[in-house]
Length: 250
Image (cartoon, rainbow, N blue to C red):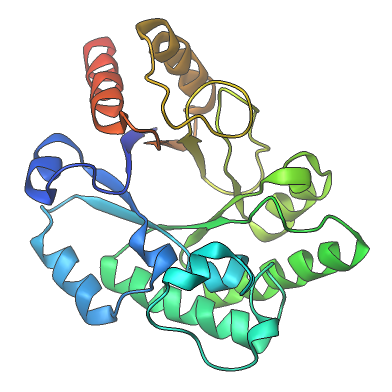
């Protein structure tokens, strides 16, 4: 199957980026969900065959107390306490429907859902998450929902049940953990730098790191497309080095 390499966001001017990659994960869709018209314009300017993935609007995953909400220009309507943490509320599901409309305009295949470390891991939140993905899989038919759980949820046994039951792709940093493979026909890696904690954005990947990554990707590429998204300060250079490495090995 196909290995696709890109960056989380545009680290360079879009024209230059398009010359180097055929995949990007949009980040602005998380902070301030753009209009469908904006998405159509972006789709129109990109080369044929270029692929967009996107992070779901933050109001679905992060509660109003999250610092990132303060930077949001367009606040959502409804009851604010009903937003975030994948609660299966009308507010969250409406926000997902809006995200899906943007994804449709982009002709995207994957919508990334990144839950914060602050998402509690308890009996109540397990019910939220299960019910959310049950309804989300219907709302986002035709798309793959790729879930990156963080904090206590990242090691939970429910991940395996959810990815199998609802066809969700389990997103991991492959230098930190292995994905649980369910019914999704793709594997989605987000690389946040090597080091302590969940992220080390200032890390620059060494040649031996990329050689190791190549081996990891090979383990999962039989029968599944593999998405490799770099999310560090040096992501443009690191992603390009890895893409070229795969081409030479090709």
